[in-house]
Length: 110
Length: 122
Image (tube, rainbow over all chains, first blue to last red; front, side, top):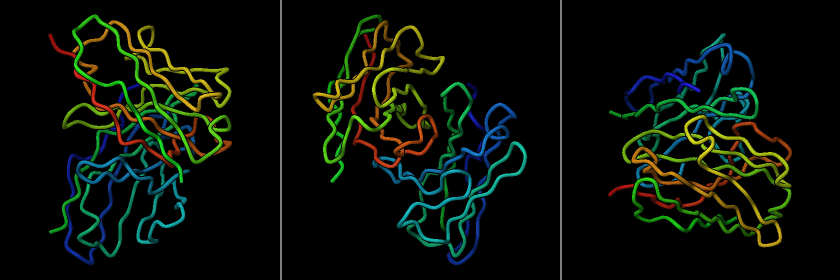
């Protein structure tokens, strides 16, 4: 159950696109289409942004999209807005009903 | 509206025990799998444990296996986490989390509590 690998930080200007990667192994990210992404604002509980690799819950803007290739999942935020500045975490099913999170990525909107 | 309210956190000495509770309301608690997720101060999220909707199956992160026990009382709409042999590295905010209906074990958490802080220190 090693944590998934995410970049510590990413940044972008308003209107631009940014992509956050989440790298695991064939035992987690690569083995199942069960990757989700969470946004966490300071002092708040996380919020689900993407589930099942690429599905968006109701109410999440379509600027947020997810994908996966091999052992790496990605979250792309297009048309970056100031309110997108937050920490982002990926989470993957890791078999035997266990889950593993990524270390988190701090998104800064310049 | 769905509400998850954790309680039971506090300061505890290493080696001691603590029990967290999570009171659920606004939904049919007995139909949902529930999880505990924790976050050490200034650190990332860590999945801790899962219990099936009926309490029949329980799963744990390696870091807490053998020390923590997840349980639920569906008649009281309450989730629990019994934490024994606590260590400094267990210091964290503990979140009670609901997963999607019918998707046991998938990392799809649609509601989170506000969290309760557990501090393990002598």
